[in-house]
Image 1 (cartoon, rainbow, N blue to C red):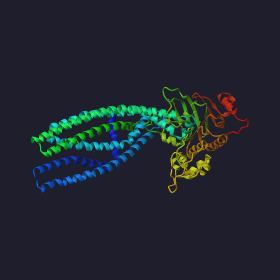
Image 2: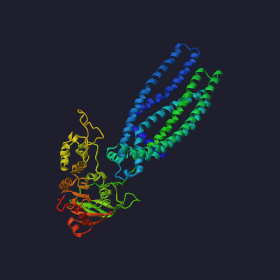
Image 3: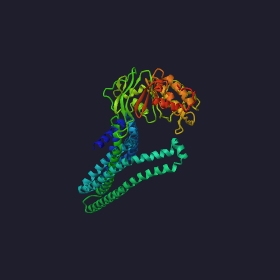
Image 4: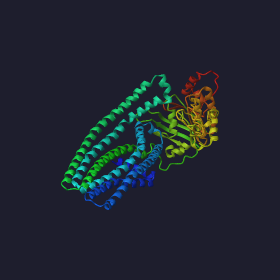
Length: 606
């Protein structure tokens, strides 16, 4: 129940923040609308009674004028209410979406995004945020229905208190049954969320350009389509089972309502025949019973629907109010410019308690102004080391220090502002060429000179300038980006892997204020000539910077000040290239194996 209350409070807060004046106007229109059907029923009763007793036209006019006014209001207010509700819904949905992803942005590390349960909750939270507009409109509709219902109930009480009690009692089982169905439906959505995410995954593979080559080459279409449809059938079966329960419940409730309405009608006719009530009372009673039954059905259905939306909205509230995934110091120290160096002290790390250790007691110093390389076979823990230095995770044991200050005691955003990086799995954004580089430092978004200088340093400026729209060319064929509205939208361009590598490098070069550069396999996928060029450019760029170079290509790191050899998460050798070659250990063996694949006099890449 506390989670439901929190969801209600969160939704109410969204409504108020979306526009208090709009909310007040919508509430006022709702209140007026609620009274109109009851007013029409009473005015009709009074008119009929006056007609039966032969009242003069002047007396009838006193009732007819307000009836016309009420009729006009009933014609106009629904349109105004619909407009206010739609506008309120749009603003609430916008704020909900913003608030959700502000909350997602508060997660410091990568852990939540590798957790299937979190991803399922995030998907439902996104739906819940989008449904916020429905929840808001439903709340106002419920208020209007409840007020109208109250008016009709009071009217029936005036005519026949026993009949009012019977109609009201008939609504209790309907409310209980509908609430139970709403809970089941919300639970079904949570239970089927993983299956629906898998369905989306398979549909994405069938329609994405990244997978298109292998899907067609290996003939995977029927295989993936079969798995997608199996996931959909599983969801359909769960929905079908719930719909059958809904059918049985709704049929029983409708029959109960018909019996109550029939009994009420018989009573009214007999009472009028006996002179117990007037013809106007009969008219009022019939309108009130219809209003009560319709109102009760709408109220019960609305409450059940709102409960379902609230339960779904609960996933939204869970994420919005979630604590950060990594601890933040109560009084974080400022991340000052690096002057001494970065130090790892007995660092142990694994991705989960039931998984093996990736790093085992790593101790390593990266002195200020020096280049330290980490080499090793695939799976040795090199890229994990880079992620820890960016504080995407925290060590399970040990610590990492920036000029002697534990990274956990620094403000994460300030720390990352002092880092530059090229990751092995760098992003290829479906943006323009300009934006693809500018994401490295958004302060340069409108500074084409800075962007071009970074691209030139990475050796990709000429290639971009030769694109159809230069730096405004969309590097995608998925979206149409009309960057110049005066022209038809140009066709996007897909870069080669080597060109994307240089764009990623330009992002790092754009962050020219960074104190510490992390280069994780920055030349993977490049041909030897391009690799040689890229490493020359990086060496010039990092000449006066502290840097960590991660690579399994040993010829690319031989001129680093210090080379650390990582084997199964442990530093087994440490020293310069010549020193490690003379030692004849793991590094020397790896280097000779790699060198044997090249000609004896191949050029150095550094």
